[in-house]
Length: 297
Ligand SMILES: Nc1ncnc2c1ncn2[C@@H]1O[C@H](COP(=O)(O)OP(=O)(O)O)[C@@H](O)[C@H]1O
Ligand SMILES: [Mg+2]
Image 1: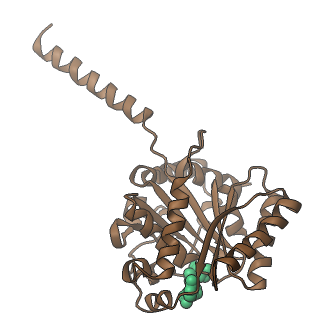
Image 2: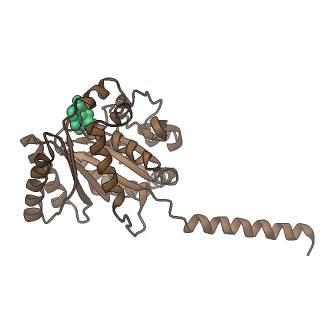
Image 3: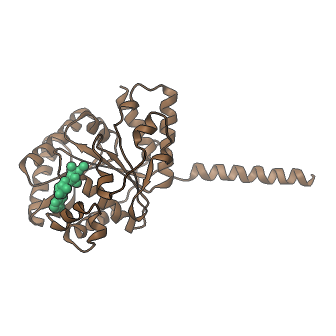
């Protein structure tokens, strides 16, 4: 064999190995949906600060702002993104272009006007779009989806498509009943349920948090056959209110305040689990595929 042939074989082999490596590598990220029954319970502050805690644990995090129409994440970061998810759905931008850099290596995507574009697209467009999302699987370990509140269609669809849903509630009676109603709605509509987890925010003390978790979990286990995992509580903390006003995450500005300490505990709890869900539709690519199926049905 001449030298050119040898070289060609060598290159071919290298190409093949690269391909095999790519296939065997698990590139999917863990997708966590953050939601609530009632609005204003602390979802966005939770999402932003849990992202920072994950980042401290050396995880690469992307936050998707799915509370459409309201610019939540960007306001808390005090950063103005140029583009939004809506630009990707319209086909004007690729997913790489709409990622904005937040603090501590976190990246986020502004929701923009929403996902209306995801229904009524052609099969080809849809598959292009879903493949586009796999870029996020490649660059992140954890993707946090901060949804809107209430039992709106879009929130329900997001929960139905997710593997893991964190419900944020407060001790307010309406917040508790709305959280339960949301779980009930998902129960009635879904065949495959996500793992439900709960955070009780703005409590006076640990006992109050535990009491509220027990109340909701008891009802949900008994009447809906859904067991909710308790992730813990977050106290009312003035340092958080101060941080919101300064448009900087409390976890960075006040690393030792009660709020930050509790969020940090929750991040450990979330990282501690043996997170292995086997299947084909993993990661954000799998999530988007399921969401598109739901929206087009
Ligand atoms: N643990 C807390 N302690 C004090 N205030 C809080 C706490 N959590 C949330 N808040 C207040 O509630 C407001 C709404 O929080 P936000 O995260 O925007 O809620 P959501 O995303 O659920 O609408 C915040 O601006 C803050 O003033
Ligand atoms: Mg919000």
